[in-house]
Image (cartoon, rainbow, N blue to C red; front, side, top):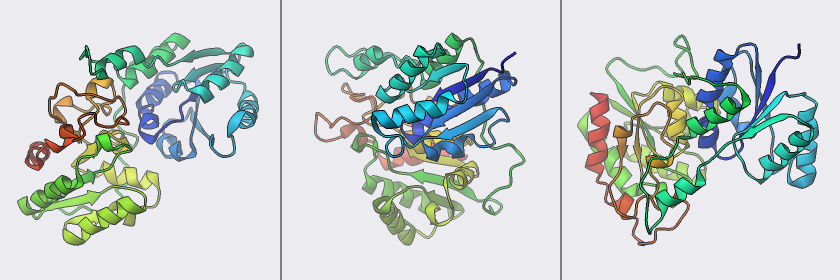
Length: 341
């Protein structure tokens, strides 16, 4: 009898790919005789290595080696040689739709995600807004596998086991706080001058607090470097680690992470670290809260126009980003301290 081998496609941004991990992990453990291969951008390998013995990973640079129609055809030939028995499209974009079509023509079992776009449009509408909670990405991903014949109970704690060796040495009595102040879009970034005030208050509160600053890219690291120079209790994570896997191991050692509605929220969630998240233009009701995170730890202000964007891409129609500017640093600190205590 042919071994079941399922291809799982999800490209997109880091946070979206990270949200597939609890689903893939649950599938692998509940169906140990089935093979699962995740197809994603090369960076995502760090999320899936050693996740389970029956989980593999294929990296595909869809903007480089597999760019355009010619590249997608080459990628399909590579994939078809693996003789997958079913295809789970967790992305549903032009590229994944094309690959899905090729597999359909080859009579593979194929299912794709329902993103509930209609409900999300009503949630962010400025007129006749319907403020209703939408299915989470985890529920949407799990539904794809149910339709393929693999219903699951999502059970996931961390990508690391309890016996994993800590990356850094933590002194007795220290409290470690992660600070991830950036996001892909302006509508999701807490004003940096206010975030600096949060850091200042935390450093004043307790000398045993050690703050780890997370960010990437030249401009982000320049700002984080300024804070690290100003506040001795701050450490720039990029100076400590080599690669995404080690960054995740630092997150595993945190007592709490402070993040935007961003990839860092989802990455910390994969290490079973509690997250205080700041929400502006976006809202947890759109379905993107981190895995196993409490909505009570989301810092946000109620406004008639919120949310105005599913992903935070849209410019503020008021022009002042009051949804972020009206959040006081003291409120953020209070939420962090409630978890630290």
